[in-house]
Length: 527
Image (tube, rainbow, N blue to C red):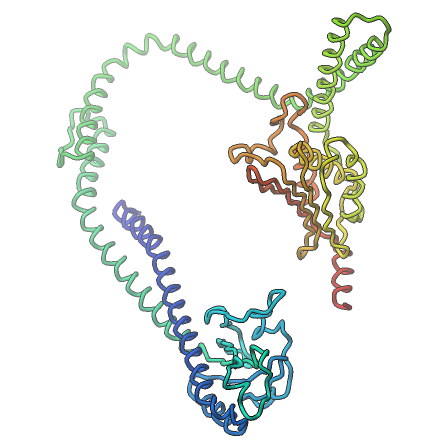
């Protein structure tokens, strides 16, 4: 591919990439505008129907009301209109099949007002609209409008609705979105065509400029390099411009002069060839030494495990003897303080050794069907009585129907304990520790959330790194790293969210057992 083709292709690609978001946002804005216009039209139609039928409603002339609604529903673009009572009964619809049926409050036509604990009385037009596909598969827009119990209504001769009833029913208007989709598609096609036309025009202009400003001087340099390659070292390239390519031509000419001078020096270098060979040999020895050092570093991981095992025995002896000496009567206070220091530091070394062993040990999980709720309860029973949890409230939000996972219960318990201990240490003044479990498709989600001091943003990316800890005295920096490895071996994932001053949440996702998933799906279908 020639230089011109490469530059043109690169610039055109960049232009397309730059124009793509613009086109997308433009089409999206157009689609949103058309959607809002459709919602406005539906709202106007609903308002018109309510106003034109108001008098007939006051006279309780349902035949005239239904006839007006039927005539309005026959207009182009209106799929159908229905009138719904406060208790969800469809008393009239241009679709005769649904008259006298009832709607649940969770239906799409009711959800915007009845989604919360208390129904809303006032909802904006956009929030009262919904887009869905009807029974025929057509995309439509529905808008509901409440019929309020005005003074003229509850004072009407029929006295059908009491004064304290705020809303007497709902008018649901459904419009077709085919015209909106057609206009959006046509607008997208025009925009894409215009974009490609602009890219082609800019590409052609760039091709001409590159040909004159770049390709011509580059070809001159190419011909010069070929002459130099044929050992015509007296050749010089023409300098056609004063830009970077012109400077490159000057550099080529300078290089040619240097090559011509170096050619004369080659004979002298022949006399020093042996010294150069020795220098090269030394460099190769240095490279070989570097490779040997790399191999030694690669085996360091195995060595760490061996050293940890060897350190355990003397550490155990130190701890035992120190403990016995502390119990000796008549010990001087100064010696007692020294023994406390020895015991504290020895315990710290023991924790580091245990962390090294856990980190270097590669164990195969002994998997079985596990209930994560039970594993969490076991972890809490083990550490929940520790002093760091005395002022901590446990909020257990377990899903009793959570499916089982195929996992090693001991390793999973170790993960929970590591996270729980970190959470307890993050709340020295007390707080709330929340546990959540639930099914999430083919996975089980476990959340452990505290209300502690949180993790600064600059440290969040390091908390799973080996030997990283903020607890200088007691931490080894391996707990979360080991936990991360255990979850990965189980085919899951672990994520952390934290905000300073608010708290931290660890989210663990584990794959559901195939058998447990089938059983869970069967229970859901039966329910």
